[in-house]
Image (cartoon, rainbow, N blue to C red; front, side):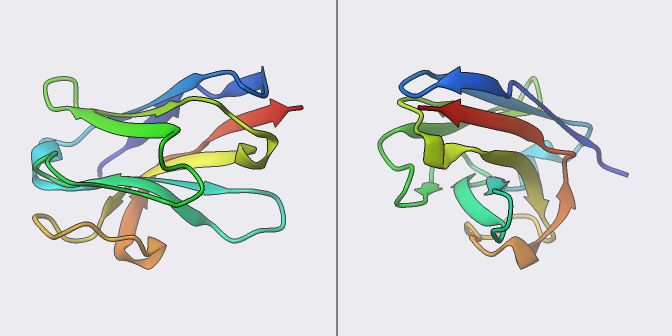
Amino acid sequence: QVQLVESGGGSVQAGASLKLSCVASSRTFGSYSWGWFRQAPGKEREVVAVISWSGGTTYYADSVRGRFAISRDEGQKTVYLQMNSLIPEDTATYYCARPRIPYRPIRRDSGDYDTWGQGTQVTVSS
């Protein structure tokens, strides 16, 4: 059973930066794309960023493009989300996730993911 463990969340002021990490206990880490999603209270879970299995392709939600950066470290089996210029609207629980099928192009629908971390809280105050 693959486990994903996120860390790096916290409470910050607007304009600050945070870097989230997601460590995967997966021997097939390199075979999958990896995604970061977030869910704010009373809202649906939404995709934030996804990185392809090769690392060569990334996707960002319009709301974070230019401020967030997703990356992966094959040796550490870790996916990162660097978040800069945080705004209050970024407040949410952030989850990393692995899609159901390996070696597929990037997927933005949470329904395509079947392995989720426990989430890490990010709170941005104005």
